[in-house]
Image (tube, rainbow, N blue to C red; front, side, top):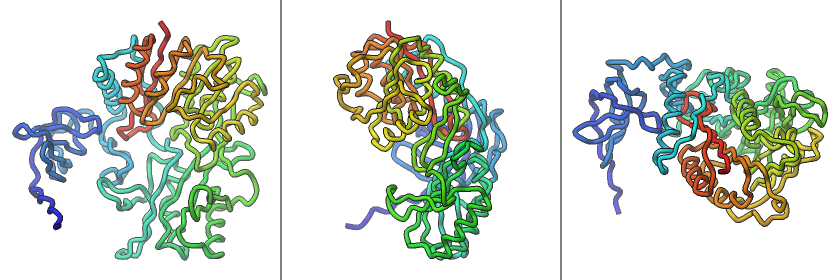
Amino acid sequence: MARRRRKKVPQEPIQCDILNLSHEGRGIAKLEGKTQFVEGALAGETVMAQYIEQRGKFDELKAVEVLKASDERVEPPCAHAQICGGCSLQHMGSEAQIQFKQSVLKEQFEHFGNLSPDEWIAPMQGPTLGYRGKARLGVRYVSKREEVLVGFREKRNSFIADMRQCEVLDPRVGHKLLELRELVASLSVYQSLPQFEVAMGGDGIEGYDSVALVVRHMNPLLDDDIEKLKAFAAQHNIAIYLQPGGIATVHKIWPESGLERLAYELPVANPANESDVVTMAFHPMDFTQVNAEINQKMIQRTLDWLDIQPGERVLDLFCGLGNFTIPLATKADKVVGVEGDDAMVVRGRENAKLNKLENVEFFGANLQADFTKEAWAAEGFDKILIDPPRSGALDVVNYLANFNAKRVVYVSCNPATLARDAGVLIEKGYRMLNAGVMDMFPHTTHVESIALFEKI
């Protein structure tokens, strides 16, 4: 059966008057009643836009010329903003970006039951450039140009963008893309090396690497390749790991001694070792928050909102490597961290030992099932923290009422599932005191948010 050919779109740009923005940050216009989503346009603007695709109920376009600019429009800080798919809002000022994200959260709360907190908190903000400490960089050899590219993928396709440097990625790697291109081009596997995993920790934490580069390679490396990677690592103070297969094959080759760990510090008083910080160690393939400054602020806000009192027990669900669990353990009588990934449970236990905390335990559990009968849950909890994946925690919030916790803090990377789950918590007898957004991913439409619930 022959495939249906996609209808050719009009080639001539058309004028669009932008009414508002979609949740994906695209301008919304109307043409004879049909919705048009215009990439790169802002509310209140008039633009000339080129068709990308026409569908039955809506069209997709991209702005090619701004006839009437919004006051919120700015010059993108990155020279590659028009082509790189890593960011989509660099043409919008930072204050306008965060207000847009707050409006998305408000709309989702209204959509899921006309919800609203007692108080909207001021958005949590931090650096807008050089903030990203975790990334996957694509690598591709372009035979027609006889050139290696390293960077993020282009908008709307799988090609690697031709980037000289990245302004949102930590400059310890973001400003070394050209050097990485030269490195790959010098290797025997330059045509088949698909990607780098990049992870950044804190600088100057004794015993730990500060930057790690995981080299994914499909074909075996020659001894000469290994020596070139080590020389690059030594020159740029980067730890090099190889990944010839699955995640289990990741191993460190430089420096040749030391732990396979990076680390970051959180400024939380730690009575166990009389330090002003706790140290969080992690493997470069572990999940960590990409924005170190926002992460610190988020943890401090969580501690403030939970208002842990002497003798209280705290539950941290979807705890990962203990990003919240360890700081909570410096305040509470007992903290239990629960995670579905066994490797992260191990990492959490490592971090408890590293910080000399004996009042914290980590357990693996299926958080989509009723966990309230587990042995670790038998004594109940006074306060609860939830930090689920994008799918949210619908199963979890249905069980939380069994603990009768006085306060619940919900950290979310998806405002739609937060709003949905907030409705369930309210039905279960909680009141939403505060909510707001955190600018974890500036220049993108990603909305990170946090809400505080109190038992009525």
